[in-house]
Image (cartoon, rainbow, N blue to C red; front, top):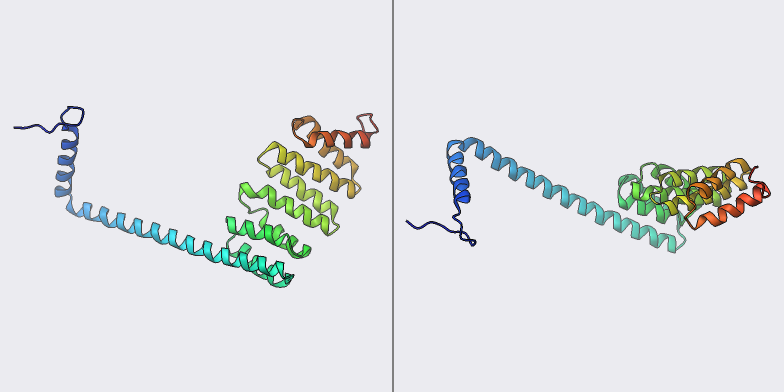
Length: 219
């Protein structure tokens, strides 16, 4: 009797035994096997439905963001705020919501603040620092330096890279100075100079420290 041989010249005994065992198990567990097949089909159907639903939602959000951009370009800020705010609320935590927040920040300041206040804490970790940074910029535009500094510090805390953390701390220092709080500005600049010395923001931070302490190193 001929023996089945693999491409390497060895008998395919393991494969044959596995198929024999599987056929035997199915014959002796017909009902359970049927249940497993049904469960697999249902799982695949649910996965396909979830995938298609996500794609449909993504396309819908994309169309709304495009509409919001057109409204901004046309200086129709109320419409832009309405459309983009809906994306932020309806698709909270998604990339679409974060993109809508960023686009909205280009429009009217107060509407941007309201949306960014809600979306920043829930933003994905890859977008959270940027969203808080946009909120800080919106507060600065609204002449609210204390709130701006707080938002920038939140952005620094969420930053994934040292250079971003240093930049947001530098922004916080500037905002604290505008708010008249030199102690907190010094703390921000010292963090950059002492812990983020390799970043490009370190040079400016040292200059600001020198100006604020009159070269003494102390306030």
